[in-house]
Length: 227
Image 1 (cartoon, one colour):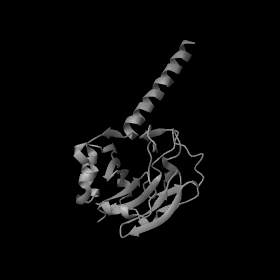
Image 2: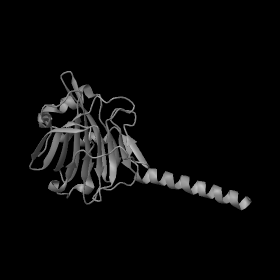
Image 3: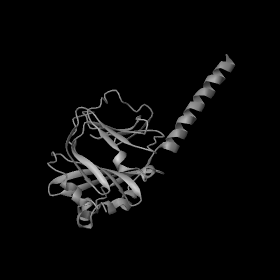
Image 4: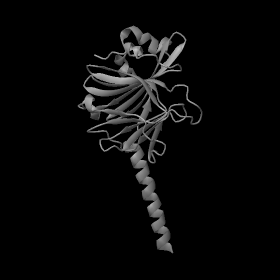
């Protein structure tokens, strides 16, 4: 009996130690400063509208190979949450080979072991611990999502429309990241979206601009510095 108890305790300790190790090794750290290094993504003419009155409304989740920045753009009475996610492992990816797939069944897709950005907001993002997009990326949209229009440039491409649930998948098609704009815990008011894949500054970025009102076009990308 004593050996059994010792064995059980040892297993529990090992499991807890492994969990703590994974969280520290694969988890992101949060801060309010790193985002300041990414304001170059906006044109100088709108920089004052990204952080009006110095309210420090940007934040970052940081890991070695990726940085998730959240900004807020103010235009008149409207406020646009903007996510700028840098994926350093995708700096050499071919934009033409990244697919955006519609009407995919994502109802049973879950991240069972990972972390969640903005967990208590209307747009939580779930990330698999140890996720990897190295070598390729595909984007899946569920049947409740809708693409109203697509656009592209020399080093970017994207769409505008409405997102309900969206997943980022690795080269094997396995979900690594899930964006959930559905009604958990309440109906999202930010599902109208401009979604952009951008290669520049020797790296790769996913840029997501949300709004309370539907986008009639993608003109809002004119606030971005996409050279």
